[in-house]
Amino acid sequence: KAGNMIKAILSRGLASLCAAALLATTVAAAPQPNSPLLGSWQADVSQSTFQGRAPYRKGTITFSASTNGMIRVVCDVVTANGAPFHFEYQSLEDDSVVPVTGNPYYDSASVAWRDSRTAIRTERRAGKVIGTTTIVIAADGKSFKASSSRTTPEDGHLYNSVILWKRVAE
Image (cartoon, rainbow, N blue to C red; front, side):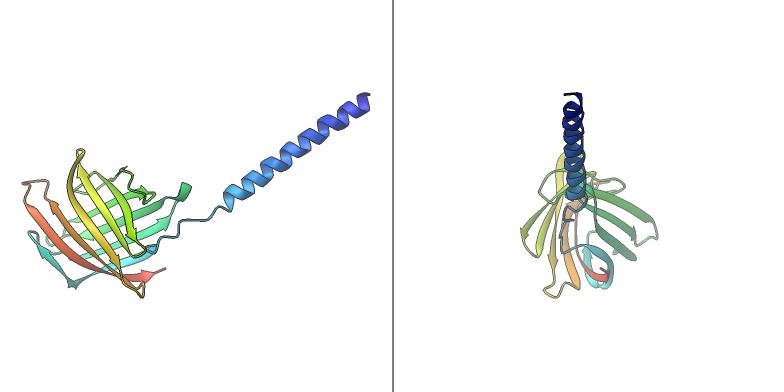
C-alpha cells in the first residue's frame, strides 16, 4: 500500500510538473503582436507639412512588440528651435487609454485600427481629448503618413501636421 501511495503521489507530481512546463512553453511561444507598424521609422520633414507650429528638424519612432500583446512606442523628436523631446507608451492598440510619458502635447492616448493600414490615435491631456492622429501605412509598407490635429498645451491654439515617416528598419 505504501508503495502504491508513493507511486500515486509521484504520478500526480509528475503530471503537474508536465502541465506547468507545457503552460510555460505555450505562454513563451505565444504569438507577438502583428502590427504593420513594427520597426523603426524616420520623419521625412521635407515631405511633411506643419501649420500652427514650426516643423521638426528631425524625428525617429520605433514600434516594437512588448509583453502581453502590447506594442511599445518610443519617439524622439528635435523641434524647430533645436529642443529635443522623447516620449513613449505601450498599447494593445484596442482603443484602451494608456499613459504617455514625456510628450509635451498629451499625457495619455488610445489607438484603434480602422482597417489593416489605418490606425487612429486619440490624444488626451488631463483626461480631455485634445487631438487625433490618423496613421495611414503605404501599400508597400515602406512609409506611413501621420495626419495630426491637436491643441497646444501653452495657449490652446490648433496645430496641424502631416508627417511622412519612412521605414529604416524592420
